[in-house]
Amino acid sequence: MGSVYDAFATHPLVPYIRQADFAVRYPYRHGERRLLDYLLIYVQEGSFHLHVEGRDYRLRDGDFCLVQPGELHRFEGTTDTITPFAHLDLFYNPLRESAFPTKPGQVALDGLEHLMQPRLNDFDDLHVPVQLFPADAPHFRDTFLKAIALWKEQTQLAMLEAQQLAAEVVLMLLKTYDTKGTSPVQSGPLNWVTSYCSLHLSERLTVERMARQAKLSPSRFTVLFRQTFGQTPYQYVLRMRVKHACDLLSGSTRPLSEIAELCGFADVHHLTKAFKKSTGHSPAAYRRFHAEHRP
Image (cartoon, helix red, strand yellow):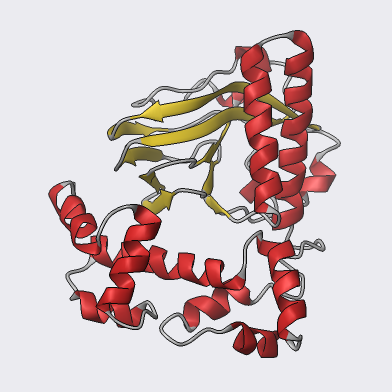
């Protein structure tokens, strides 16, 4: 489809929040649907499953996700959740007032093509995943939450500021996931971190080891890591270990000792302690819940 920046001539980038709220829900399940616009979600508390185009994402406290227009998806809340969200357009459409957030069960969008937003992932120089890892996660989160709070005020000045903050959020996304740009996450000195940690997750991943990989001192590596990922190397790796444990617990019958080893925990006790602190549930309880609620 060409460059997203070339497309600005015909599709100006003018973010527009259509609907936003701080959703507070008990465990729930929403039917499949496709969107005309974008849906950006922050998981403030709790956890839920997001199924997008046949792939399952397990999201919990601190995670961000983005559903793009036309993607077949559904939600399944596994705990009580607080999930601030926004339905928004990224590109200007003179008919945007006629567009709307679709309802669960609405999967056919025939006749509504004129209201559908262009998809970011249809451009050659962008690849935005469903689960987001913004370069400066704390700033991204705070900007997004402020935009939602202002939009809910529904005054003209608050709405104007909310749209301005939405533009800042979109700009941060473009900088993070521009495959031909200078984003620290995609093309900077730590672009290898996620894949490297995934490949070596069962091993001992120390700051010293990763700093050697980056050819930096441990102190300089730690500073650059926090600037890039918004957390310390220890927090980042631990989060990856717990997330991998979640996948193995819900999608396999492997014993806990094997899961602990595969995820890089010292033993079952270490796995259980870290898992419960992160998710609020023991590994056994988490596995049991998913076994009972498996479709």
